[in-house]
Length: 179
Image: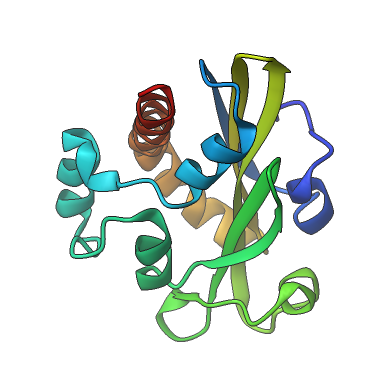
């Protein structure tokens, strides 16, 4: 389990079953600009992301981050501009589908039929006048032993690719912010 932060994930998803985290440093002193780029980065600028999303059958007609999140039924649950934003969703019900979150209270409370709660965050920290650190973390809370066991196999298979996508997103943000 990674070292816990004191950000939005700690508030909205303090307990979790699986997690992964990545960081990069951007040579741009404007933390607000880096934040804005991250919130709506153009995912189509990465051939790796395009290939992996197509292989998984994910919506490939919406490449800006916000539109992609909406197509996936993910919700921007909270933000602290310019230092952090949190996107989340839950799974459950018929077919264990991804479910849109109505509001933060719904996500924090018990969700009847839920098998997983998932949150991922991007955090931004001004290192000095010319650099911003971006830290991204994903957490998955599996609800119940059956969910935990089912997700374990999926996680072992998907984690390297999920990590590659996250690193590519960080690279895209860094490249745009430094240009």
